[in-house]
Length: 458
Image 1: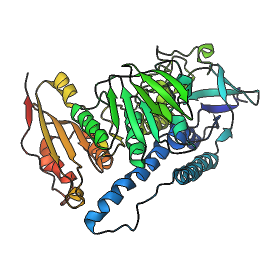
Image 2: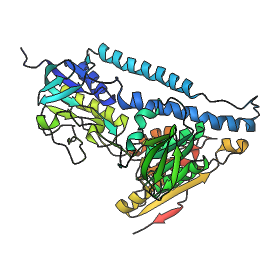
Image 3: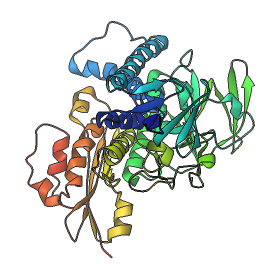
């Protein structure tokens, strides 16, 4: 008889943990999973999915404004109802969470609605049930949690992105702190829903680490949407004022806001998991240290997703979870390649990007050709809007290999997914040039740019 109750115990039922559990069970492993909140994790419950639904809601403001240019006459100004959106969102994430649970049950995975902590290399404790479970392998997939930093007097009065989806009413005025993708996405969508938004950050522009042209384009778009950008300034104090808050900024300015949202990053959710007791090594940020196969320094314990702080994206966690199960239970030895990952930022206009930035390409390759275009999208010609699209291809001048493609505009995220295939296969600029255009589309610009706009040489 086995000394273990299960072959695999998964701590955390987010995207990575659920995928690992299902695939491992498919290989015949006896699997259990524990989740102390709702099945689905950050992405489904309080991240990507509800955020994208809110982005869609916000974009109707542009659709209504553009409609007149195409012959539509709206009988009265449209009225937005925040509680209706919140309720619709809740119905959808409840449905999705139920599907996740149903798929786990269908795969034969035992679900524990409980918090699980490590007791040792092969044992976990279900906290509320007070039950110990022995496991041949343990997978930690607890994801990340918002950081409420930097600390300042009154920070306890602020919220994070976890709470923003369920505000009782649409804020009249809102201060968002941070310059990453979460901050800019919420700034963009709340501005379109009618909130007066101020976006404050340490940096001189949003989206540190992205290509500079994307950063400038997003900053311009936020400003056009009415967002008050406070670059280089952060909150110094927050105080209650009536039903809202007064925030004193680092430059002495005072801002009135109904809601202050801190979006200054996320940290691996490793606190209180018992990692130290089990002997699992973490780095200085609290992330679990793993190798290319998601193995920790303890042979029976593994980790995937944001808790490892490698590439913190839902599809990456899913791929890591799948690869872990293939390797440990399927005998396939699969390591995840974290290079050339396509991603999107759902501002309006949105970003789609894959590969490296122009600056990174120059630093890494020296001789670089850049092909760039900016144009007014076809929809704007009749709508009369100020929208612009930007597309940029970064090429290694020696090998002709495409190193990065960066798009700002409608449908950019969808384009990036397909471009990710091409770049993963090692596409060259000649391959782009040999591809027939689809007309009339914005994406045809990607295969019709013939002459470099900039040449960098060592």
